[in-house]
Image 1: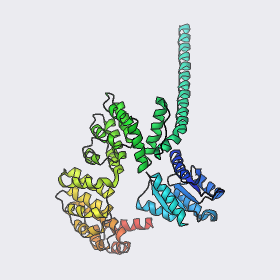
Image 2: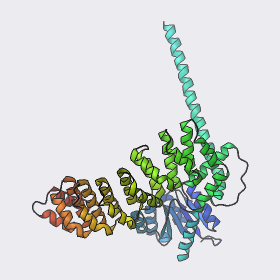
Image 3: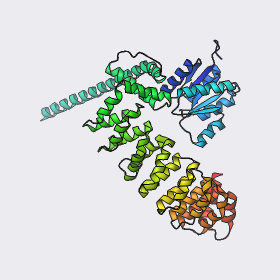
Image 4: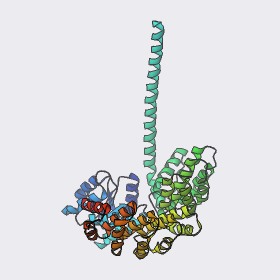
Length: 127
Length: 337
């Protein structure tokens, strides 16, 4: 939670268009947003800022979304942080792989920004 | 003579210098154009995002350059979003006349312009472009037709399903292009594909069956099961493969029967399907086929048996005269584990 009481959301994606779109939607919904452009940066930002939730793209350079999720689960500071994976890979085994890595939910690309906003709200509400 | 050579080499040196200058100048110009493009798109992105979100925004008066840059950003978003956001993008392109302009370009005498328009329409998220793109599928230029196919896929145009399947069969388009377009349309294409099973030529029906296997779900299996008894071996083989992909457990009995098909490649696909379904009841029949069938069906049966029941595979392979395929499947089992 940020100083002004807004939940802090981490968005990690290597595509600047997607980063901007998700940030725009979540900021409009009243969240504060921090951004990362790859999995490695996502882990660093998550450990430094301790966000309330992370939206992480699966296909990213250096460390992909699955691995970033797995590593975040191993750190005590982020082990309970809800993670939503954003993925174009929707085969059953890809989804299972995301949940195995520790994700709480996934959103399929192409995605509806409204739906993503609702998922974020729902996942935060469950905690 | 020496003077002449000196003169020629001087001219060549000067030409080389001018060429290097021209290349360097071109590189600087391209870098500058790229920087300008990126900064313009970055500047226009907040406006594009507001449009994607359907916020009411007053568009400033743009020059052609800015207008094209905004269209590019929105076209990129059209490939990333769905639902109402996509409808907002389509509405923008319709209202601002972009669709009509690009559709008119499809009539251009220059093929590159038609191809460029066909590509652009795919990013404009408006189904109003579908009829023009369907017509462009038959363009005499392959690049135009391929661009139209990709765009129809992006737009999820159901009316394109039938022509795309026919294009897949007759090779008018690169197969990867038509197949990818059909996959982009997604599961909504399945009813149209089912419609092709009854009357279409055998090759078309076979591809339609394959696509149902990729896009459909287990509830599509009854119609595919019927096709296991089709008079065409190609259709029977594709039906078996599709049932395996759908993991249609209801089809196990019929697939076991298909292991007895008189055509080897039907038996191959039936074995693969039973392996994918992991039908334990098929183990004895698969073991029998792996021991005594022709090369390809026997190999497929042994591999399927490895998936269905590794224990049975190991036991059968240890029997005398079990043949090379079962032994190979056991070896592969060890490699995988």
